[in-house]
Length: 581
Image 1 (tube, rainbow, N blue to C red):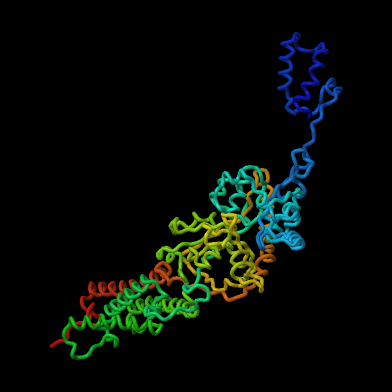
Image 2: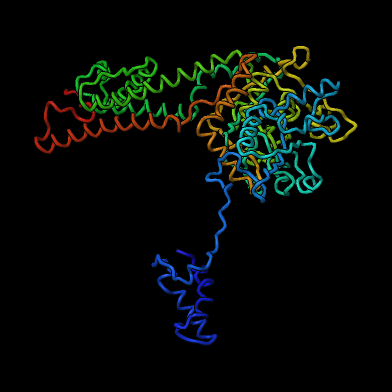
C-alpha cells in the first residue's frame, strides 16, 4: 500500500476537482484531508487505490545504503562519511621485539650506515612511516590482518610523531600512556602495541576488547650480585629444615600431636591396649595420667616421622581418631617432602635479595616497575615504587643494584629479556642522570645500547644471573588491548573477538613469541615461602573432624551404657582405674 504522505499528495488535487466532495471551502477541505488520513486505506487495510490516485505517479523512497555492515567484523566495510572512500586510520606503532616490528626500516637504516630508531626523528628513515612495513610481530600482524579485512587505509606514525599538546597534558615517563592521550586529543586513531588496559588509561580514551592477558613475573638478583655465587654457611641455615612450613603451620602441627595423643589416651586407656600399659612401679594415679598423655604425644609424633599412625586402636572410637590422624600425617608428610625438594634443588643458587613481595616490604627494599602499573601494587609503599619508562632500563637498573631490589616484568618481555635474551634497548646509565630511563634528561649525556643477543657484545646473555621469585601470595594480571578512537571501537573490537574465538591470536603469539625465545641459560628460582595455614586448612579441618567424631562416639557409648545398665565390667572408664589393694 502507498505510504500516508503519498496518499495525501495524490488525493488533494482529486478532491479539489470532485463534485462528490463532502464539503467546500478551505477549512472543510483541510478537515477532509484529516479524515482521509485516518481512513482504513491510509492504514494499509485496503489494497485498491482510487482511480484518481492511480492516475498520479507515486513517489519513490530512496534505497538504503548498501555499505552498512550487518556485523562490525566485516570485510571492506570501513568508509568515510561519503560511503565510498575507504576510511583513513592514523596508527601509532610502538616498536618492540616480537610485538611490533619493522624489518624493512631496520634494513634501510643499516644500508644508510646509521643507527636504527623509528622513534627518534633524527634517526628515523622513510620506511618507518609506511604502514605495510609494520606487519611483523604478533600484535603488528594482528592489526595488519584487521585493517586489511576492513579495507581501511592506514597512515603509519611512531613515537617520533608525538605532539607538543600531549607533552603539556601528560608529564609522566610512559610513552604508552602518552599515546593514549594522543587518542584522547584526536591526533591518533589507534595505538599499536601490547598496551595495558588500566583504570587510568580507561579514563583517558576507549579501549578495544582485550586480546591477551599479561601476567607479571617478580624478579630479583642474587645477594652477592651478578656472578656472586652461593653465600657462605651461616648458623641460621641449620633451621632450613623447617622452611617448608610457615611458623603457624608448625604450631598447629604440635597442637594436632597433643590433641591426637590425649584423645587416644582417653578412649583406649584401660582397654588392654598395649600402647597404654605401664610398669608396676607407676602406682600413683596422677603419674599414670601424666605418663599416658606423654605416651600419646610420643606415638603421634612418631606417626609423623614414620609417615603413618603409630597408634593401635582396639575400639571404634579409637579407629575414628586413628583415621583422622592418618589423613593428617599423609598430607603433612607429602607436602613437607615436596616443599623440601624445592628448597634442596635450588640450594646451589645464591639466595635472592628478596624471597617474596612480603619480604621486600619487610626489608624496606624498593621495586622497579613500569609507571603505568605503579598503583597496582598497593602493598608496596609508594616511596618504594620506582616508576620506569620501559622494561630494558628497568631490568638494567635492578641488575646494577642502582636502587631496586626487585622488578616486575610482563610475560612476553620475560621471554625476550630473561629466558631467550635477544632484546636490544637503549638506557641512560650515566650516574648523573636522576632517572636512568631510555634517554638521558640532559641531552649532553649519552645513553648506551645493550644488545643481549649479540655474541660480540659485552652484554651478551648477561642476565642469566637474574632470579625468578616464586611467590604464591602475589599475582598481577592485566588485560592487553588497543587504545582506539570511538568511531573505530566497534570495528576493531569485533575483529579482536572474532580472531580470539577462532584461536588466530593464540597462533600469532606462538608464531612470534613462544617459538622465538628458547632458553639460553637455566632459569633459576627463589623458592617461595613455606606452606601457610590457609593452604593447609583443609587437612586440619578433615583430620580434626574425624578425631572429634571418635571422641563423640566414645562418650555416646559410655553414656548409653551407664543409663541402661549402670557400670559394665566390659566398659572401660574415661581414665584408668586404680589398682585394688
